Amino acid sequence: MTPALFHGAWRLALVQGVAAALWSRVLRQPYWWAPIHLLFLPAAIALLTLQLPSWLYLLVVLLLALVFWGTVKGDVPLFLSSTAVADALTVIVDRENAGAFADLGAGVGSAAVPLAQHRAMIVDAWERAPLPWLVTAWRCRKLPNASAKRESLWGCDLARYDVVFAFLSPAVMVKLGEKVRREMRPGSLFVSSSFPVPDWQPESVVQIEDRRGVKLFCYRVVTTQQKK
Ligand SMILES: C[S@@+](CC[C@H](N)C(=O)[O-])C[C@H]1O[C@@H](n2cnc3c(N)ncnc32)[C@H](O)[C@@H]1O
Image 1 (cartoon, rainbow, N blue to C red):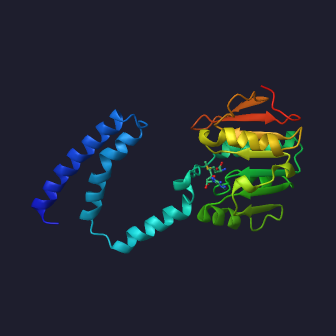
Image 2 (image 1 turned 45 degrees about the vertical axis):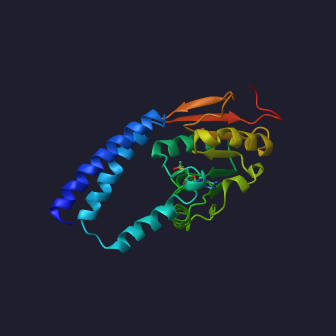
Image 3 (image 1 turned 135 degrees about the vertical axis):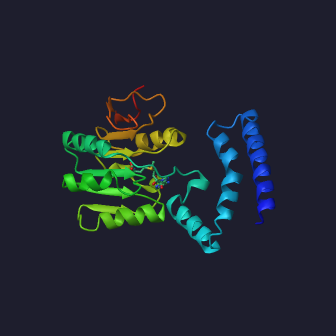
């Protein structure tokens, strides 16, 4: 790009970014869209000036697709639980005397792997995105009690587990609550990180002292219907 064209493009990109950010507010998009609209085109131009080889862009897109596999179809993206969350889960599985544990959407095994190392119980890490699943499978390779399942959490039979853990999103909590109610055995425990099941009364809420101040919502499964 010649310098004159480059400066012109910058100006246009800034005008476009500001207009798009303002328009996103008018359309009442979530607030975090505004900086994305504002910076998208300027960032694209900045990258063009670096004159990086085109295969690098393809590589980044492929890597992002392998990590955020189903996100475009509405799956929850990858965020990692802290070690403090994993520590709190070790206390919970010991207290529950758990023989089988599932992490629904296990990411890179931040919760599942330390739990499998901590306790000789079955640990199933359900993860659909290829790259996080591969990392979890690699981390589980020397743990005979742990397995990484590259399948959708919606196909998992929860009746097998004493404790089920999920760190997903508010968007799926109603559906997940229905699955828990349908499938988990009475007396077993469902633990949801950060997001409560709407209208359910948790047995306890564990406050984690990590950077995000995560809460673990613990639900005891009762006979046919969760207590309100
Ligand atoms: C917020 S991350 C949590 C990761 C991990 N449980 C932790 O606490 O660090 C959610 C994960 O769920 C996975 N996921 C989303 N929808 C899924 C589905 N339908 N089946 C399996 N995994 C899914 C995503 O790929 C992502 O890795």
